Length: 246
Length: 221
Ligand SMILES: Nc1ncnc2c1ncn2[C@@H]1O[C@H](COP(=O)(O)OP(=O)(O)OP(=O)(O)O)[C@@H](O)[C@H]1O
Ligand SMILES: [Mg+2]
Image (cartoon, chains in turn yellow, brown):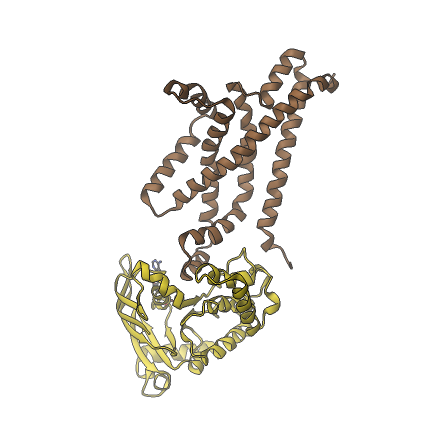
C-alpha cells in the first residue's frame, strides 16, 4: 500500500503540492488527472524519491521514502515509466532492461536476459533486443521502457504521461500493452490525458487541482452525473479533453 | 640539401629517444586520465569540500606554465629531500598537470548528459558507484572522447619540455645529435616525422575508441 499523508512540496516560494492525502491499495489501477501544472508529475516524482518532500510523509508498504536507507527498498518496489522514455542510449534494448535487475537486485545475467527477452516478446519487439534505443520508433522505445520497468518485478508501476510523446497510432500500441497489464494484479498509478483510456482501465480516478486533490472517486462514481461533474473545475476539464480527443 | 642518410648512423639514438617519449606519453596519458577522472568526479560531486578542492586544483594547474612545474619537481623538490629521477618526475608532473585539463573535459561530458536519463536510472535504485560506472561515465565519454584526444596529443607534444630536465627523450637526443653532426635541418625534419608518427597513432586509437563508444548512434546495427 502506498500511503501519502499531508504531502507538501514547494519549489522555492511556489507551493506545488498543498496537502495531498491518498492511500493506494495493492492491485488498484489509479488514474491521476488534472490540468497542466497541477502537480501530477511532482506527485509521482515524490513517490519514487526524485523530489524531496517539503513536509508530510510517503510510505510504500513498510518503507519511508524520506529515509535514505529505506529509499532503495521503495525503489525496488516502484518502477517508473517516463514520458520521454529516458532509455540508456549507450546500451542495447536488452541491456537497458537487464541493467537494474543485475546491478540493483543482484540477478544473474543469464536469468535477467531470459526474463528480458520474455518481456520483449510480450510487447512484440523481441527482434529489437540487440538494437540501440536510437534505432527504435517512439512506440518501440516506450514499449522497451515498460519492459525495463517490469523487469524489476515491481509491486507498483508509476506512469507519467507515457503516451504524450507518441503519435496516435503508437499511443494505441502502448495503451494496449498497459491495458493487458492492468488485469494482472500489478498496482498502477498513472498520470494521463487519455480520459477515455482512464475510464477504460482504471478503477479509481484522482483529480488534482493546484496541488490539492479535488476528487478521489471510484471510476463509476467519477464519471457519473453526481460524481466529478458536480465540480465545475472538473466538468470544464472533461469537456475540454473530450473536444481535444474528438 | 636535405640528406636524411646522414642520420642513418644515429638511428639507434633516435629510436631510444623515441621509446622514452612513447613510454612517458603512455604512462602520463593513463596517469592524467586517472587524475582527471577523480578531479571530474570531485567537481560534480554534491560534497562542498570536494568541489572546492577540485576547483582550486584545476585553476592552479591550468595557470602555471608547465616548465615551471617541471623545474619545481626536478630541481625544487630535492631541496626538501624528495628525489625522483627525470623520467618519473616527467610522468608525475605531466599526470598531475594534464589531469586538470582531462578533469575539465570529462566534467563537461558529464554535465552534458540528459538529466532525464540520470533521473530514470536513479529511480531504479542504482548505487552512486554503479550509476557512474554503468551509465554516467560511459555516456559522457562518448562525447568527451574527441576533446580528450586533443588533450592527449598536447600531452605528447609537451613531453619535449622534459629535455630541459636532462631526460634523453626524442627532443633531448635530437639536440645532442644536431650539435654533433652540425645538421640541425635534417635532425629536426626527422624529429617532426617521429612526433607526427606518435600523434598519428594516438589519433588513430582515439578515433577507434570514439567509434566504439558511439556505435549506438549508427543506423541499423
Ligand atoms: N524543479 C522545479 N523547479 C521549480 N518549479 C517546478 C519544478 N518542477 C515543477 N515545477 C513547477 O511545479 C508546478 C507543477 O509541475 P508538475 O510538473 O508537477 O505539473 P503537471 O501536473 O505534471 O503538469 P503537466 O500536465 O503539464 O505535466 C508547475 O508550475 C511547474 O512549473
Ligand atoms: Mg507532468
